[in-house]
Length: 227
Image 1 (cartoon, one colour):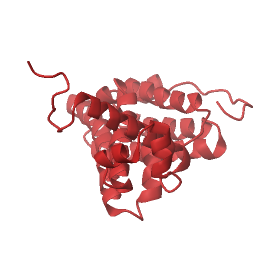
Image 2 (cartoon, one colour):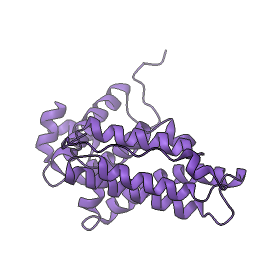
Image 3 (cartoon, one colour):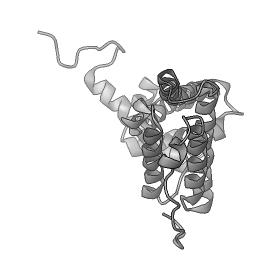
């Protein structure tokens, strides 16, 4: 009978996979809070509760661990937006997704940046391999947005002159810029304004009359510093 900890496709036992996952999770949390440069392998060992031999069994050096963190954070960011991200094929769906993103920022009290955006900001000019991996993660994110917009165009919900690929790029850039502004200002209003403006722009490519029918009412301003 096969042992329940028999080697899997990645060559690790079930126990080994759990240990590796614990190391990556600890590293991701530390790097999100303190940055890559501010996180040492000793910090990771302490939080993960592993020895040096265990850590180096799974990761030859810090940069191998950073690579695993990039993959982990990319999956976490995209997974956290499901099922919305898988079906951004209407203006209503885009607005519902927008509300989810704003909700995330409110839950965090606008502290911290985008997990993969923050990694990109720190690593893009210092580690070429990391930049390539982060670019691939952003392409996955953009591809989900693009897929929904292409579906809208194929159904005739967007006019022939709409470019789903360009709109997807612009929308993802709006998300990233909006997250940064919420972090700086400690309130979600800048991101709300930016996303509403971008989604309204996409809606302007729909048949006449849809924009006004679906435009959300103006929101009252709040005096709270963080929402």
